[in-house]
Image 1 (cartoon, rainbow, N blue to C red):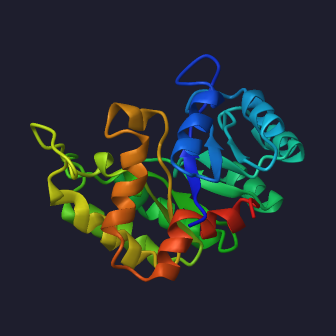
Image 2 (image 1 turned 30 degrees about the vertical axis):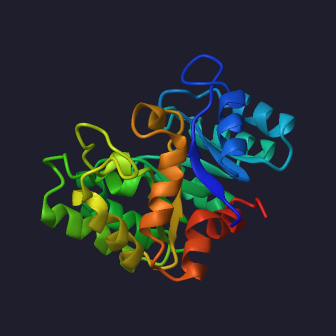
Length: 256
């Protein structure tokens, strides 16, 4: 299966350099990856450097300070350098959303369940119907977050009604409680597993996998973050799994 990891952070000054990611990708037969700029870092040059060093292996999703008045112009410059997308929050100013739509970039959206469930975010999706918006981290939903009430979860999954809304799933360590003691081959309580299939049902054909490297290393590790979701979704159609683990992202980020 052709695999694209849609959620990786690399940096020379925080987390891990790109060589650590490449090692994990090679060991787990991951073909390509999307570099997602970490929050608070507005210098995106390292991600572009990674693309130059590993031609055809990476796509870059950048970050700009949306509170600055020159953010739209800055984004234009980054798009000209080859950025394929930008990381935004649900409540970022509409001026930057307009610029993203104008440039034809992809949005990788990070936020809390309450932010995603808000009418404000639904209006954003409705206002930019041609703008692809990927909801990160299962919309922030976990089995341990008290804010993730069933009503809030319903609102987040209901966003699948917007054809331009996509959902990003990650390692099971984000949504499942770890068993104690840790045992193989499945080190989690299965309490969060229904969320995985619920996302695939709500966002049919618009789900993609990302490891969340390197924070995933503090949870189940890269290999488990890939292979355990693959195993849990094994009963779903092969064509659907092909899209989730690579096909959709390859087209969306120009990695084919």
